[in-house]
Image (tube, rainbow, N blue to C red; front, side, top):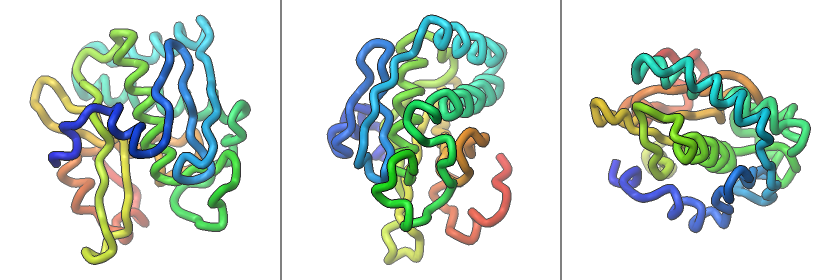
Length: 194
């Protein structure tokens, strides 16, 4: 849990990724940020994202639903630019170093970039963005995995925003970090309920 107390910038340094610059996000793909493609949000993109986030203004739960919508929108918007429209969810090592395919490190980085962007625009009312979380190291019989994280500022509860498990544009798993940390590969075969 201590890993989420670090700033997101430390994640970018560790991954060899690039932080946002203004309206430009650097999208990781190819597994482990092998490739980084800059994408600049237009004024129309910003208006659309803002509309999505406004749907979450009533409560932390509503904001997490809006975050889900924003992640889905980003994946669909960036797919044609990055070549990730057909990104396959989960881990398939045959897609390593393939442009447009993303592992959990790419997904955690890209989702963190989006969340950081939303926060910089003042559109997150109930959550703050933290360093992504990691779990598993083989000895505990869990495959290593990473995910973006936000903390509910009304309760202090950290939530993962994990877009890795399903294919491009599908809803990310959003669930308490404490539950996500306990999950195993077998859990991922079932639909994840909040």
